Image (cartoon, rainbow, N blue to C red):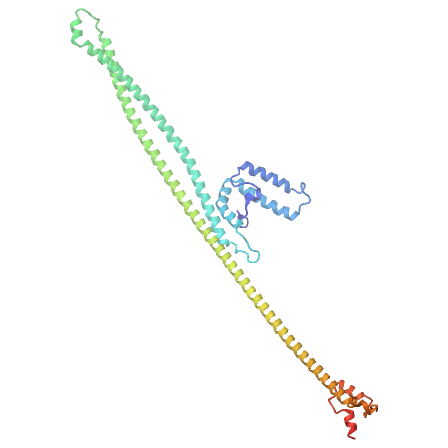
Length: 373
């Protein structure tokens, strides 16, 4: 499998579980392939459909092959963890290095090779075990047959010995005058002796064959036990190798997971520090704006107070000037009993006070000035 596509979730692409049977994978692939076919869905985006078809093909090629699927299942947990690990678009996690992916793929290939070797060894052992089993079964059958044949010969020999003993017993000798039996001829005696001798020879031969078969059976059982121990030792060795490789894979994945978590913590800490800095800057800016507004309001209040004071001073001055003018412009209002009308001595026709009202500096009254002339 290519490194660029190994990290894809092939089970999710095919829409099946990790424990799905091969027939379910095939049916799911056919259904999805038909859905992506341009004749079935002409409205689909051509580029997107092509990319999905490529992924679907890679997933199907991997999961339909038993050895490839077994190798993929070894790294599938890490694919699930990477897919479920939260990501951030602003500070994306650093992807695993190509060296790490190469190591994972190499170790997965080693595990597949070991498992394949185990399967081949199991197949050889099955054949060898059947061969040993057949040999042992045949030897056991021969041994049982020889033992039965020897037992039969022993029975015959025992019966003949009993008959011979009966003939030579005291009872037979005492009863011989009463119950006379015909004696065997010399030929019959020789035949019986020859038959007994042949049965003894046959028994000896069968016993030797029995001992030989028992020795062969013991040898076969020892060879079978030795071969079984060798196979078991090889299986334990392979299992240990697989455990060591899987431990390395888990250790590397744990290291990568800790690194991702560390980067995530650092990213969160940086984000928190950045938020705190922005909050401090915002608080300082607000405080500065409030200070500026307070100073501005204070200055505006002072300026308004000053203008009000100036306005009151001008008004007060105007009142005082008007009062002064009124007092000096009509000095004889109280002496109206003389019967003479008041004639102002000013020759300015009253425009002098108007100039004063417009802000001309205070000067003496026109009447006063004229009276001095």
